[in-house]
Length: 147
Image (cartoon, rainbow, N blue to C red; front, side, top):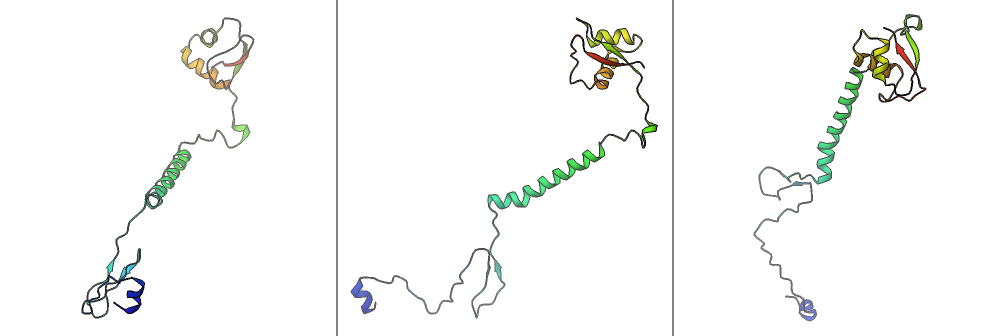
């Protein structure tokens, strides 16, 4: 104990061993280097991923891959082009029908095309008139396919 430490009342509790090799100081994520005179291989500190690091390492590539797969599947399942030019298009033959009170698409389909399945005719009417559902209002004008 030095005289200055005795006056101030501090005591250094560290005991140094002059014969022991110095311990290397390890910084986070750095290589551990052996002290001079000690032979051996360099040891690398273990890599630890945080929660955010795991998300960036695993989650972000998975999200990008899912976006790529969805884009590719949308490209594959895209509807085909109808025609190259307007003169190659053919109009669907249809007639205009006014919905009467109490009349439904099922009744209209049965009266317009009795030889066809009414479910197919109703589906054609909904598609041709761009209807959200199979509800119609009295007085509404509908296009009904004739074939």
